[in-house]
Length: 542
Image 1 (cartoon, rainbow, N blue to C red):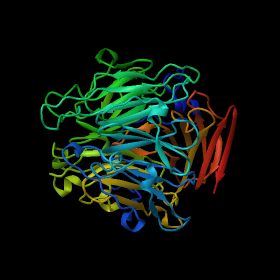
Image 2: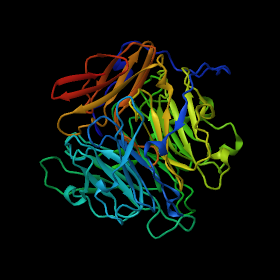
Image 3: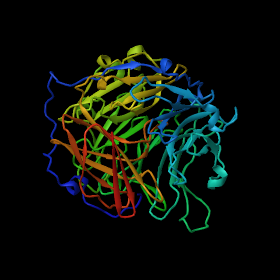
Image 4: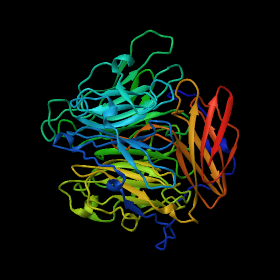
């Protein structure tokens, strides 16, 4: 994934139909958007958890949504901060109310090791088909190996992961073509022993590079430097050529000594090197907390959204395709908050993620907010529904998401498998929220498709692959990645809204650059596309 051969633009590869050149028109005041309705069901579902904080856990509060037992239902790992982390198994029956069972004892962590957790991401580290967990802590991080039945055990020693005692807040992972294990990108916040608000300095960040499958060499610990207290990492194929680089959202508000040059982009290879002005890179100055990326305009290059203090940013590649020069279009796209208070430094946004909540085949953007000293309005989340012209309109109030909670991390998944994406939100010193999307309750709800990618051998979840899909006159592209958001997110099927199209035609670009022939799949299916050598099989489940 990290050093794939240079390839043509994804949409040109697909070549089903050319999209028009993207231009931002004047938006209409009368948008005919289907607004999804969300209802809080955490308590009723059995999901009862609190992220307990103090000054050091002003950041963090992540959640990992993933399938820990192979039943295609999304289970949950929840960070606890000063409290114990939690593991909840999705025990919902088909077409019934969402139910979770607390199985936190299955984490295999004692009372000490289960605390000081800031977040987590799922990945199949050992390529056995069962997703494991990388647990970020203020102390030693844990790689938790999954036995396929949601029973976990610490595997740091077995995996060769060196000891550490940092305050980890950012993580991403990807497989190199010759490695049986993923590279683990570990971003550390304030150095241990230094509290926020003082003369803070940032901890050292690094990537753990594992040797090739037949190489007995030890794990390499390669610096990611300079490191400016990252709160989110995400590997992004910003040029659309299959080369993933590391984007960092950095906390510039830690202290005067910690404030760096702003956002960062690193060239990824055997060594890690920061892009600079000579490369065309100009760092933004937002005190960042979360990252999201998706190609929403069909040009094969993903747009990147950054949350943090004040209004979020929305970056598009500006100029030459081979130069990492970006323009912030948050204002033009309708992402900047209209309320001056929510544009101010008093407004904090954390988790940020693209999705399609109303299944209209146009990407939406979720932004989770929360600040203890903020007004209720500053804490309201944003549900930015996408328009076909590439702009957004905030519909959180109408959707039932404008509530006064102090949000942090989140994950998006279809917890009841009804075809609509739900949201789990970790709140600071408040109970976790589970917001069920009722968009699919009606018989005439829009169509959808979930696509799970799998491959034999290394990298079983096909991290680094992309799905290029066409439904009617709408083209969509999504990449399978690990990282981003704030301290966690979901690993599972890629969800596509199909609107009123009865089927979708898609192609998969696998991590090694090979591309499938077009595959036609009916709407409203959970499809598993598996690669075994040169053979592609498609399971079009109901």
